Length: 264
Image (cartoon, rainbow, N blue to C red; front, side):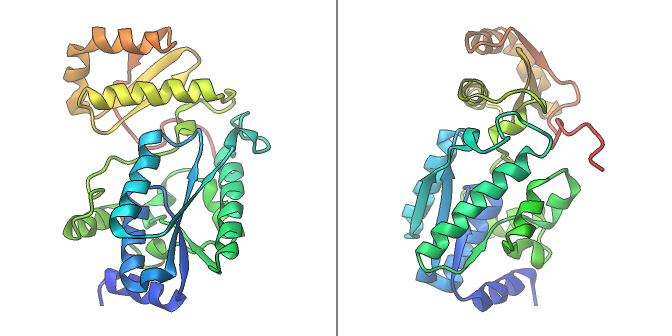
């Protein structure tokens, strides 16, 4: 039996589920398979917040509309969650705990006893304090349970003609900031606008990391030359957003580059 078969069996056994749906590769795949297996017994739950780019929220709406999946979007005031705006090293835990408490409440109010989310087996390789919140709240992670990796999810998504199969990895905008730097709506908007500009310039996998007034651009090494060729336009645009210095990280894009500390 394949991992996909295992996943379908897992979901069928749950009977009725609310899916935490962000529009990323993993949650889109999970929602699609759940809907195929359970039909109307699936509800998509999406949080709209300062940490999520507007285009990502719009993508969730478009997908659910196209697939005829019921979706509930709730406004999450993440900057007012106790401790979050101070951006401590466990910010992700504080935020995810609050968000999933809301998911559980919304699910229960709509007759869904189980909430599932899209973590995969690769997620254990990075510092992810939010995983602790999922465990505490007993949120189920079917993709991890059946041993699916990101690469396998992308391959299956391509076979299923999902638009997200080759979508760049996404993380909340708060992950662009040095731990301990106060988060504000203005700073988050600066990052969103900067990354939108770079994406519009043709860069695919990217991050704009923030160190005070310094923007540190991460792209794939093969895109370095293109950044250099566009350096004047990139510098001018990012400075117009409020950054004083614009730099290119010579290590290139990598997951969790802000997590350079001992997490033990």
